[in-house]
Image (cartoon, rainbow, N blue to C red):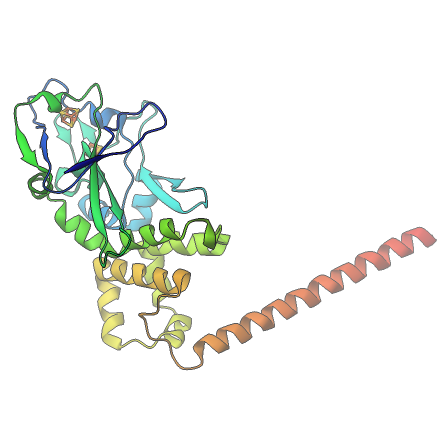
Length: 296
Ligand code: SF4
Ligand code: SF4
């Protein structure tokens, strides 16, 4: 099945929405004349699981991966933070070598999907989200001329993308929820945007946050939970998506300790009151100084 959609600008997107059974004509191989061309002009957005796979492949911390191999960008007009693979000044991915991708076994989701793009959709009345696909046809990519037909489902299996989609599912649902909410929820505060970044991409900082005493007194979680997320990045990442859903969308799946919310609110009010009093005091002092200057 394929359904047409409009593209209001010149683009390499083929304007057809494709479903998992659609057959595409495509094959990429090491011997092809355009080998590595796509990686020399890379624009690769990363998912939370991509970051874990890449940092493990390189044997570096999440913090190091973010610092040395990614660049931040805004995913939408509300400033929702995203990260992309860093490239050199010519736009080439830092992982491309003459032999191909140096992190091939752990290459990101977008590299596996290429030349397909994908997006989650929620049809009115449907109980589950569905994924739809579209084709990207760039002039340099010769894979479209190869004589091989394959269904999108089979291509996803061949490229090992299913595991990535499965682990990123909750986070992708969150993106869809944000998109569907549209302008009604407005631009999140800077604190919310930082929180989104930490829960989505910064596994080291998220782990430090979850291990704090203030976190433990807020959420009602078993000791085994802490033992697991202390060691396992994927478990922590999955929890990060739930935490984001709860904090930003009020989708409560993590039990809170009785009275924790009220206590947090009281503390916030207390801090706000202290801040207002401090600001009022500074204002009073400035006015008194102005008065003194005017008299002398
Ligand atoms: S990560 Fe690998 S496959 Fe993806 S753009 Fe870089 S070199 Fe190419
Ligand atoms: S066929 Fe396309 S995906 Fe494969 S190396 Fe060439 S440009 Fe890249």
